[in-house]
Structure formats: structure tokens, C-alpha cells
Image 1 (cartoon, one colour):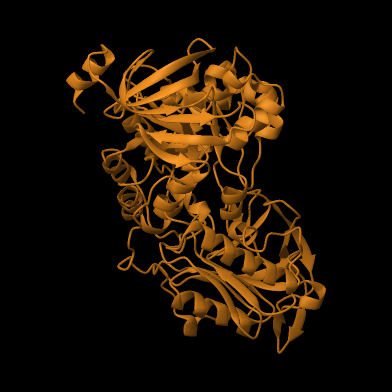
Image 2: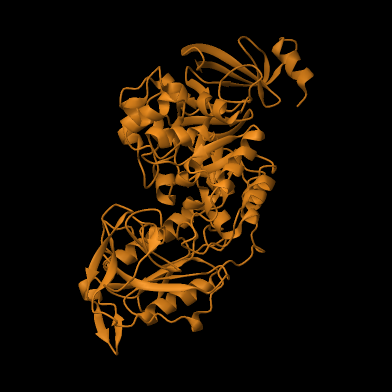
Length: 569
């Protein structure tokens, strides 16, 4: 940037590159909305007022706000690459994203983090990353990688790293786990933020968690919990994602007194929701509908995250700040007419303003290492009663249901007519070839099988079917396409390849959405219950830290005790 030229423009001695004329500028530090012209030079705001420029855009009284900042998201949940995700959220006024690449790091470690940085290097908007703090999340499943304190310290020095990702093992922090405390201390020593993850923690445990240096939490579920955390200066993120929508319960936290410590986040955003509903514009529209002052709401998506992450160059409209700007007809729906990134028009009337390059992924390494011929899904009939994982409508928690599967040849079999299905979790990182099988109820599949490489947090293969042969067939197809989602209806395959870590597609978001929709519709036709998301529900089968019964590649897990339990009763 030629700062001398910027100053010449600011002094009114030379024309600006671009002048945004007749806009109602939202000044967040004072809460005022004043009609001002904005002079842009070298990608930054040179001044506000009467200026000349080489190019003039008349805003005709539209509102101008800073570009939005996403404070916490897992891009991998959108099933597309960072480049594709950033293009999608730019359409809704997001100009900066802070992401935790926790999913790809569980598969590929530091190489996964490097991929996210490299893929987004020339993206339409800015991507910053937090270094995942808990890889693997637990010892109850086999991850593809481990980020110990040495790996975390190395990653903290990568470009565009802003802090330590959500510290999920809050008991470990509170009880003084050496590895976790070292990661936190190294991050603090570099002047970076430490993100939290501590649902329902309070009282002395909250004191200890905050004393360690953790600064924020996006897992707040109630107003009472939020107030306790805000009281101690903990940043609370209001989440509006595809799965969790805590903002519906927490909007009453937002007022003039508390707003400085509130941020907005999506956490997880699925393809169809991202395309059909949007991004942070949804949060803002919801808050305003609930009676929140639009200026206060805007602070949660702009100046607050800028201060939290130490972004001194963005978050408000002022001389010297990046010309990351949104133009709106109103401050209710927050549908951008125009989006500017560093003074360049990138979105106009809901369309990307100019062509974007697509990255090539031909040489991405295979992460699905499984020998299907060696898999044995047999479950001996040691008892006629077993513990089955029971899925619940519209929830990711499960229950333990005692069932009596069909017995054939001394082995326990699936019985789809009674909604008793075989489920298997298969290690796919090439570590040990581990596998465990059990039973699933509440899913509803009556024919065929489905398998996927999306399986939080270690992302092994999870497969469900009406018979062992059907399960093995979809697992083999999953291996052939190097990861993704595969459904077999006993006649043909319906699939969405996710060759990047078994988590992300190389296809455009629109095509990913369409393919996923076909799979979900076919699954419903095969009996999967409408209130059960055929893909999302399977993605949490192996997650040991969520109640109540789970299955990892190492065995059946009683999540209430965080320990293995016997399948047989």
C-alpha cells in the first residue's frame, strides 16, 4: 500500500480510487447514522466527506456498514473447500472468517491446517484460523493425527493464525492437564486468543477455566449461564447454525451493557442452509425482529470480533481501516445490495461481481485406508438381549435401548422390519484397522445400506445397513471414491464424493447441495424417518462426549461415564 498516496487523498489533494456517495454510514463507536461520502484509496478508507474520485457509485441513501466477521465456524461442515465456502458467505456480507479446522486436523494433522491456509490464499474474502486444541478429542476412538504441544506451537507460527481453537476438554483444563495448559500458555505468550467450549460449566469450575486463560464460549445454552459468563468478562458467542440455534434462547442477553462481550457465530453450516438461508445476516435479522437496536446488533458482527481477535484494521468505518463494506437498503433483513472487500466490489445484487478462479485438487492424498476383505461384522449371540443406540428425532443425543435382534446361525442379525439395524464404525486412517459393530434403532432404513467418512470427531467410517453384505458393499464403494457419503438401495449407488480428507468436495456448493439432497430423499424413500437427518445423525454416532450411547472403532461407549461398555446385556 502506498501510504503517501492515501494521505494525499485524505487531505483532498488527489482523487480517490472510488467514492461511495450519498450513503447513510453506520458509525458503530458512537451509534450514529450519518449521511457521508466514503473515499477509498489503495483498499482502505482514506476519508469521509467531500472528495473527488476516479470512480463514483451513488448509493442513493442506502446504509453502509462494516463487513461482517464470522467468529467461529468449522468450514468442513459445509462439505466444500475453504475457497468455495468463502465465496458463499461473501454473498451475505461476510468479509472476514475465523475458522477452527478441527475436522480436517483430526484426519491430517498439520497438513490439514496447511491445506486450509493454502486453499484460501487467493480467496474472495479473508480467512483466519485457530489451531485446533484437542486432536484427538478423546482416547476412545482412533484419529488420523495428533496435535501435541509441539505441533500446536509450530502451527501458531503459521500465517493467518489468530489463536487456539475451542478447548473442548474443559475438565482437563480445570484439573490442570499439563498438555492443555502448555498449549494455552504458549498461545497467550504469543498474544493470541484462546477459544473455549464449556457447556453448562459454572461456579468454581468456571473460575478455574477462566483463570487458565480461556476467553470465550460458543456453547452457552441459557440466559442464566450466559450472564454468569458475561459477568466475568467471558466473550459469549450467539450461535445460529444448522444444528444448534442457541441464539433463539439467548437474544435477551443483548443490550447496551452486555453487547461489548457478545459475538456471532455459525459453528456449523450445511450446504442447503448456506445457500437458501445465508450466514451472519440471519443472526442480525433475527435479533432486530426480536427488538434489538440494529446498531447494537451490528456491533456483534463487526467491531466486537475485531477487538476480540486483535484485528486493528477492520470492524468500523473510519479513515485508515480496510474498505470492507456492506450496502443495505434497510437494517432489518440485512440483504446486501453491494459488498466491498478492500475497496473492490465483490458482490452486487446477490451475485459475485467478477469471475473467480477455482483451485485444482488432482493430487490430494487419499485418506481412506481400509481393507474391506478383512472386515468381519459378525456379532455372536452370547445373549439374546443387547444395548442398541437409539436415535431421537431432531437431536444428536442418543438413548440406550435394550433390544432382541434376530438370531441366525448363532449370530445376531439386523431386523429392519422391527427397526433394528446393524451399525459399524471402521478405522480408516491406516492406524490399526480397528472396527466395532453394534445395533441402531430409530433410523428406519428398510433396504440397503449407507456409509460415510464424516464421523465426529475422528472421522472414521460409520456404516448402517439391513445386512452385513449391504454394509460391506457401501464401505467398499466409499473406499473407491476416496471418502464421502454412499447410499445403496440394493440396485444402484447414490453418492457424494468427498475426496479432500473424506470431508470436503471439489465441486461447487450448489452441486454439493443437489447431490446431498438426492441422497437424503432416496434415504427417506427407503424408510429413514423424516425427523431423522440420514447423514447428520450418522455423523455423531461415534462422538464419545455427547450422551448417552455411542460406538467408536474401539467399541461401545457409555458417554455418561466416558468409558467402554459391553454390547450384551
